Length: 267
Image (cartoon, rainbow, N blue to C red; front, side, top):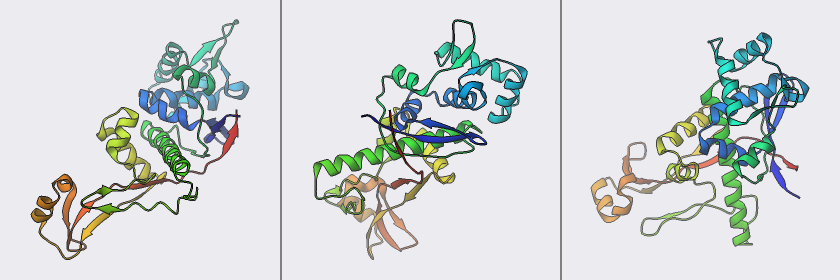
Protein backbone atom coordinates (compact mmCIF):
# COMPACT_ATOMS: atom_id res chain seq x y z
CA UNK A 1 0.00 0.00 0.00
CA UNK A 2 1.69 3.16 -1.18
CA UNK A 3 1.18 6.39 0.73
CA UNK A 4 1.00 9.55 -1.36
CA UNK A 5 1.02 13.12 -0.21
CA UNK A 6 -2.31 14.61 -1.23
CA UNK A 7 -1.94 18.33 -1.61
CA UNK A 8 -5.23 20.02 -2.39
CA UNK A 9 -4.93 23.07 -4.61
CA UNK A 10 -8.03 25.19 -4.97
CA UNK A 11 -7.81 26.19 -8.61
CA UNK A 12 -11.25 27.73 -8.98
CA UNK A 13 -14.33 27.92 -6.79
CA UNK A 14 -15.11 24.38 -5.59
CA UNK A 15 -12.28 23.00 -7.77
CA UNK A 16 -9.60 20.95 -6.03
CA UNK A 17 -6.74 18.81 -7.30
CA UNK A 18 -4.57 16.24 -5.54
CA UNK A 19 -0.82 16.89 -5.80
CA UNK A 20 1.92 14.58 -4.58
CA UNK A 21 4.59 16.23 -2.43
CA UNK A 22 7.37 14.32 -4.19
CA UNK A 23 6.12 15.79 -7.46
CA UNK A 24 6.36 19.31 -6.06
CA UNK A 25 10.04 18.86 -5.27
CA UNK A 26 10.82 17.33 -8.64
CA UNK A 27 9.06 20.17 -10.49
CA UNK A 28 11.25 22.67 -8.67
CA UNK A 29 14.41 20.64 -9.23
CA UNK A 30 13.76 20.42 -12.96
CA UNK A 31 12.87 24.10 -13.29
CA UNK A 32 9.40 23.52 -14.77
CA UNK A 33 7.28 25.31 -12.16
CA UNK A 34 5.80 27.69 -14.73
CA UNK A 35 4.78 24.80 -16.98
CA UNK A 36 3.31 23.01 -13.98
CA UNK A 37 1.33 26.15 -13.19
CA UNK A 38 -0.14 26.03 -16.72
CA UNK A 39 -0.99 22.37 -16.22
CA UNK A 40 -2.81 23.15 -12.97
CA UNK A 41 -4.71 25.98 -14.65
CA UNK A 42 -5.74 23.72 -17.53
CA UNK A 43 -7.01 21.10 -15.11
CA UNK A 44 -9.00 23.84 -13.44
CA UNK A 45 -10.78 24.99 -16.58
CA UNK A 46 -10.95 21.81 -18.71
CA UNK A 47 -14.11 19.74 -18.90
CA UNK A 48 -14.47 16.08 -17.98
CA UNK A 49 -12.99 16.37 -14.51
CA UNK A 50 -10.07 18.47 -15.67
CA UNK A 51 -8.96 16.16 -18.49
CA UNK A 52 -10.31 16.92 -21.98
CA UNK A 53 -10.41 20.35 -23.54
CA UNK A 54 -10.71 22.23 -26.80
CA UNK A 55 -8.69 25.31 -27.60
CA UNK A 56 -11.59 27.75 -27.82
CA UNK A 57 -11.64 31.51 -27.17
CA UNK A 58 -13.65 30.82 -24.01
CA UNK A 59 -11.05 28.41 -22.62
CA UNK A 60 -8.17 30.71 -23.55
CA UNK A 61 -9.84 33.63 -21.80
CA UNK A 62 -10.38 31.50 -18.70
CA UNK A 63 -6.69 30.60 -18.68
CA UNK A 64 -5.69 34.23 -19.09
CA UNK A 65 -7.94 35.26 -16.22
CA UNK A 66 -6.75 32.49 -13.93
CA UNK A 67 -3.04 33.06 -14.57
CA UNK A 68 -3.15 36.81 -15.03
CA UNK A 69 -1.63 36.75 -18.51
CA UNK A 70 -2.07 39.98 -20.44
CA UNK A 71 -1.10 38.84 -23.94
CA UNK A 72 -3.85 36.97 -25.81
CA UNK A 73 -1.25 34.73 -27.48
CA UNK A 74 0.23 33.49 -24.21
CA UNK A 75 -2.32 30.69 -23.48
CA UNK A 76 -1.81 29.08 -26.90
CA UNK A 77 1.96 29.31 -26.52
CA UNK A 78 1.80 27.70 -23.09
CA UNK A 79 -0.41 24.86 -24.36
CA UNK A 80 1.99 24.21 -27.25
CA UNK A 81 4.81 23.96 -24.73
CA UNK A 82 2.90 21.34 -22.72
CA UNK A 83 2.25 19.37 -25.92
CA UNK A 84 5.99 19.36 -26.64
CA UNK A 85 6.70 18.17 -23.09
CA UNK A 86 4.09 15.41 -23.33
CA UNK A 87 2.05 16.89 -20.46
CA UNK A 88 -0.84 17.41 -22.86
CA UNK A 89 -1.77 14.57 -25.19
CA UNK A 90 -4.19 13.73 -28.02
CA UNK A 91 -6.55 10.77 -28.13
CA UNK A 92 -7.42 8.78 -31.25
CA UNK A 93 -10.04 11.36 -32.23
CA UNK A 94 -7.56 14.22 -31.95
CA UNK A 95 -9.07 15.64 -28.77
CA UNK A 96 -6.59 17.24 -26.41
CA UNK A 97 -6.37 16.11 -22.80
CA UNK A 98 -4.29 16.99 -19.74
CA UNK A 99 -2.00 14.27 -18.46
CA UNK A 100 -2.46 12.97 -14.92
CA UNK A 101 -0.02 13.67 -12.10
CA UNK A 102 0.72 9.94 -12.00
CA UNK A 103 1.96 10.29 -15.57
CA UNK A 104 4.31 13.08 -14.50
CA UNK A 105 5.60 11.01 -11.59
CA UNK A 106 6.36 8.16 -13.99
CA UNK A 107 7.96 10.55 -16.45
CA UNK A 108 10.19 11.91 -13.71
CA UNK A 109 10.78 8.40 -12.32
CA UNK A 110 9.69 9.56 -8.86
CA UNK A 111 7.95 7.37 -6.31
CA UNK A 112 4.91 8.87 -4.58
CA UNK A 113 5.45 9.45 -0.88
CA UNK A 114 4.81 11.93 1.98
CA UNK A 115 1.68 12.64 3.87
CA UNK A 116 0.24 16.12 3.69
CA UNK A 117 -2.76 18.24 2.60
CA UNK A 118 -2.96 21.84 1.34
CA UNK A 119 -5.45 24.38 0.01
CA UNK A 120 -4.10 27.35 -1.96
CA UNK A 121 -6.80 29.34 -3.80
CA UNK A 122 -4.30 31.66 -5.45
CA UNK A 123 -1.80 29.04 -6.66
CA UNK A 124 -1.99 29.97 -10.34
CA UNK A 125 -1.90 33.74 -9.93
CA UNK A 126 1.85 34.13 -10.49
CA UNK A 127 5.10 32.27 -11.05
CA UNK A 128 6.33 33.42 -7.66
CA UNK A 129 3.31 32.07 -5.79
CA UNK A 130 3.36 28.66 -7.41
CA UNK A 131 7.09 28.32 -6.67
CA UNK A 132 6.54 29.40 -3.06
CA UNK A 133 3.74 26.84 -2.68
CA UNK A 134 5.76 24.03 -4.27
CA UNK A 135 8.74 24.93 -2.11
CA UNK A 136 6.59 24.82 1.02
CA UNK A 137 5.18 21.41 0.09
CA UNK A 138 8.59 19.96 -0.75
CA UNK A 139 10.19 21.43 2.38
CA UNK A 140 7.44 20.00 4.57
CA UNK A 141 8.09 16.60 3.00
CA UNK A 142 11.83 16.88 3.64
CA UNK A 143 11.24 17.74 7.31
CA UNK A 144 8.76 14.86 7.69
CA UNK A 145 11.21 12.42 6.11
CA UNK A 146 14.04 13.62 8.37
CA UNK A 147 11.81 13.26 11.43
CA UNK A 148 10.82 9.75 10.38
CA UNK A 149 14.45 8.80 9.79
CA UNK A 150 15.37 10.06 13.24
CA UNK A 151 12.54 8.04 14.82
CA UNK A 152 13.80 4.93 13.04
CA UNK A 153 17.35 5.63 14.18
CA UNK A 154 16.46 6.26 17.80
CA UNK A 155 13.29 4.67 19.10
CA UNK A 156 13.46 6.91 22.18
CA UNK A 157 12.18 9.80 20.05
CA UNK A 158 8.50 10.24 19.27
CA UNK A 159 6.82 11.49 16.12
CA UNK A 160 5.60 14.62 17.89
CA UNK A 161 8.93 16.30 17.29
CA UNK A 162 8.99 17.72 20.84
CA UNK A 163 12.09 15.71 21.72
CA UNK A 164 14.24 17.29 19.04
CA UNK A 165 15.92 20.42 20.34
CA UNK A 166 18.82 21.54 18.26
CA UNK A 167 21.77 22.63 20.37
CA UNK A 168 25.09 24.27 19.63
CA UNK A 169 28.56 23.94 21.04
CA UNK A 170 31.18 26.36 19.65
CA UNK A 171 33.73 23.57 19.63
CA UNK A 172 31.49 20.86 18.15
CA UNK A 173 28.96 22.83 16.08
CA UNK A 174 25.23 22.28 15.74
CA UNK A 175 23.52 19.03 16.59
CA UNK A 176 21.15 17.54 14.05
CA UNK A 177 17.55 18.74 14.02
CA UNK A 178 15.05 17.60 11.36
CA UNK A 179 13.61 21.09 10.87
CA UNK A 180 16.92 22.99 10.82
CA UNK A 181 17.38 23.36 7.06
CA UNK A 182 20.14 25.56 5.73
CA UNK A 183 19.93 27.37 2.40
CA UNK A 184 23.01 25.43 1.27
CA UNK A 185 21.35 22.09 2.08
CA UNK A 186 18.16 23.00 0.20
CA UNK A 187 20.13 24.36 -2.76
CA UNK A 188 21.91 21.01 -3.10
CA UNK A 189 18.64 19.13 -2.66
CA UNK A 190 16.85 21.06 -5.42
CA UNK A 191 20.00 21.48 -7.54
CA UNK A 192 19.58 25.24 -7.76
CA UNK A 193 21.55 28.24 -6.53
CA UNK A 194 21.43 29.45 -2.94
CA UNK A 195 20.01 32.74 -4.20
CA UNK A 196 17.08 30.87 -5.78
CA UNK A 197 16.33 29.00 -2.56
CA UNK A 198 16.58 32.27 -0.65
CA UNK A 199 13.89 33.81 -2.92
CA UNK A 200 11.59 30.79 -2.63
CA UNK A 201 12.01 30.65 1.12
CA UNK A 202 11.29 34.32 1.75
CA UNK A 203 8.30 34.33 -0.61
CA UNK A 204 6.89 31.28 1.19
CA UNK A 205 7.42 33.03 4.54
CA UNK A 206 5.77 36.20 3.23
CA UNK A 207 2.80 34.18 1.97
CA UNK A 208 2.42 32.46 5.35
CA UNK A 209 3.20 29.01 3.93
CA UNK A 210 6.33 28.53 6.01
CA UNK A 211 7.20 29.71 9.49
CA UNK A 212 10.79 30.45 10.40
CA UNK A 213 12.47 30.41 13.80
CA UNK A 214 15.72 32.37 13.68
CA UNK A 215 18.24 31.01 16.16
CA UNK A 216 21.58 32.08 17.54
CA UNK A 217 24.11 31.10 20.19
CA UNK A 218 25.09 34.06 22.37
CA UNK A 219 28.32 34.69 24.22
CA UNK A 220 26.58 36.63 26.95
CA UNK A 221 28.31 39.90 27.82
CA UNK A 222 31.01 39.49 25.15
CA UNK A 223 31.27 42.33 22.63
CA UNK A 224 34.61 41.55 20.95
CA UNK A 225 33.66 39.98 17.62
CA UNK A 226 37.26 39.54 16.51
CA UNK A 227 38.13 37.57 19.63
CA UNK A 228 35.27 35.12 19.11
CA UNK A 229 35.99 34.75 15.42
CA UNK A 230 39.63 34.07 16.21
CA UNK A 231 38.73 31.50 18.87
CA UNK A 232 36.23 29.70 16.63
CA UNK A 233 37.32 30.39 13.02
CA UNK A 234 35.03 27.70 11.59
CA UNK A 235 32.07 29.84 12.66
CA UNK A 236 33.57 33.25 11.84
CA UNK A 237 31.41 33.71 8.73
CA UNK A 238 28.26 33.72 10.87
CA UNK A 239 29.53 35.42 14.04
CA UNK A 240 28.27 38.96 14.64
CA UNK A 241 27.62 41.54 17.33
CA UNK A 242 23.84 41.69 17.80
CA UNK A 243 22.79 45.12 19.04
CA UNK A 244 19.44 43.97 20.43
CA UNK A 245 21.25 41.81 23.00
CA UNK A 246 24.53 43.72 23.13
CA UNK A 247 26.47 40.46 22.79
CA UNK A 248 28.38 38.53 20.19
CA UNK A 249 26.47 35.55 18.85
CA UNK A 250 26.76 32.83 16.22
CA UNK A 251 23.86 32.85 13.77
CA UNK A 252 22.54 29.28 13.66
CA UNK A 253 20.55 27.50 10.97
CA UNK A 254 16.94 28.61 10.71
CA UNK A 255 14.31 26.14 11.87
CA UNK A 256 11.51 25.87 9.32
CA UNK A 257 8.01 24.50 9.62
CA UNK A 258 5.31 24.22 7.01
CA UNK A 259 1.97 25.81 7.89
CA UNK A 260 0.20 23.56 5.40
CA UNK A 261 -2.29 20.95 6.51
CA UNK A 262 -1.44 17.40 5.55
CA UNK A 263 -3.38 14.28 4.72
CA UNK A 264 -2.50 10.77 3.58
CA UNK A 265 -4.21 9.01 0.72
CA UNK A 266 -3.85 5.57 -0.84
CA UNK A 267 -2.75 5.02 -4.41
